[in-house]
Length: 42
Image 1 (cartoon, rainbow, N blue to C red):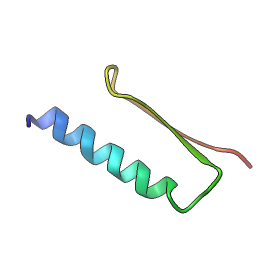
Image 2: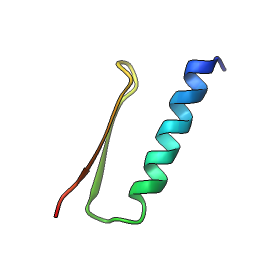
Image 3: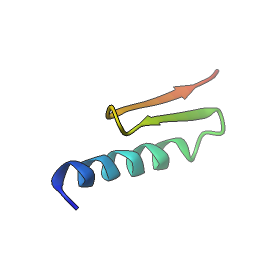
Image 4: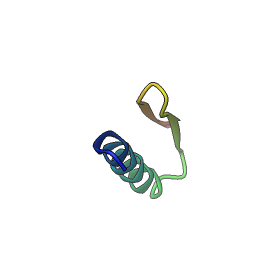
């Protein structure tokens, strides 16, 4: 696994852990473009 793939995996895991405590959170991952988004609806 190269460095970029490792960083991508770390970011995805961090965001999943962050969103796991909030049922209103939605995650959007675009690994091809390296774009990651967390949406929280209030």
